[in-house]
Length: 229
Image (cartoon, rainbow, N blue to C red; front, side, top):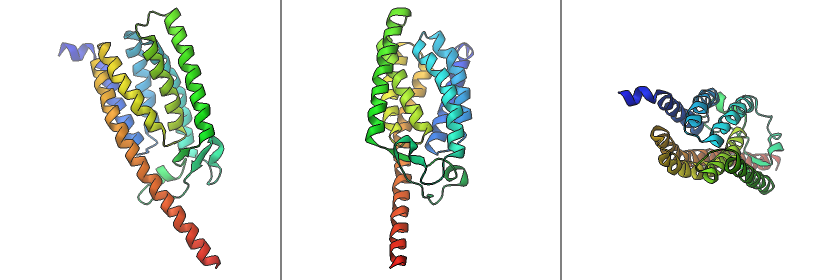
């Protein structure tokens, strides 16, 4: 009981984080306000655990959550979503409600955007590693900077509904489980283990949507061609 009392903030953050990922898998826009709450909690948790890069990441999450909330709600008109360098699937999927289909659509990552994101990751990883190694008492600067940099990229991709962000979460969550275990942050370790499992579920769920939308798009194209004939 004393342990729960001493760690209630971390436990609350872990519970909110699980809700966040569930909403992410289901493509519910409410994931963003939940994400804001989770990030605020983990500012304190990571500061206490001396994981400074991860702590700073929560500030980024707060900002990107606001942007993601806006992008998911407003989206763009069909055919105008390619400003992110992605391939758009703009048809509505049967069974999706207006909340999910009225805004931003799930997209696939194009090679040019992937190259840019890879370059950004390398720059972030190198810069954060240098700062943590030389200006903080972080015991794990390399791994901390790796998770932070990968999470920055993955969260931006999530905000733009790019399908491949799930692959990045799988890697980041797997490394996080090991890191948080080594730092004694056991509720957070459990959270990220759940994240890891749910990342695979998200990968499968979002793939179904893309496949369905692609089939609808192809059927619509064939119907149009047939009608024109």
